[in-house]
Image 1: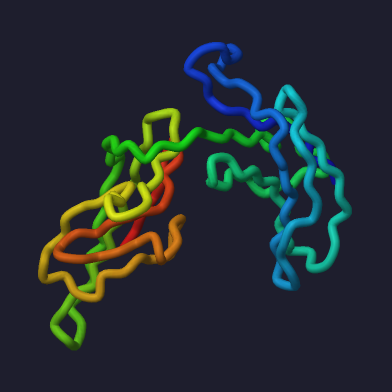
Image 2: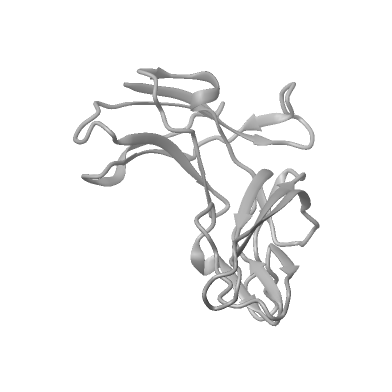
Length: 197
């Protein structure tokens, strides 16, 4: 199989017709994730135009997933799972973004609440699902040190109990609850991200 694509990043000025420029000379790593094993398979540097090409032979469990990834500004960016024998164009494109810890508001595109029935302890399970949109051209990251601010936070009722993250796109250690506030310190890239707790 072959994946042949580009690594691009948004540019305020000087990009192509889509406002994108190349991410040159970055390592693109092909990863495999399967029930039998997981890890990097091969890697190559992108050229001056951000292009890369990797060839591999699938192995092991037939349900294994392959994808290409790049680290940019300490954040990992991925392709979708590579399903084609020759993955090109949108399937093989990786868009990376510069990072910022300068806080700015994220847009809440959707907020959903799933309210469960009263249980034997006379309590209800409530699942909150937020669809957040980063409408900028930078990945929002949490600052380090004593002045660290979350990338996103919201107040919830003080009497909420056992507040925890549900399965989703952020790591459990990037989620916290204290004094009536849920806080997320995970990076939030441009586009939509779903957070549920």
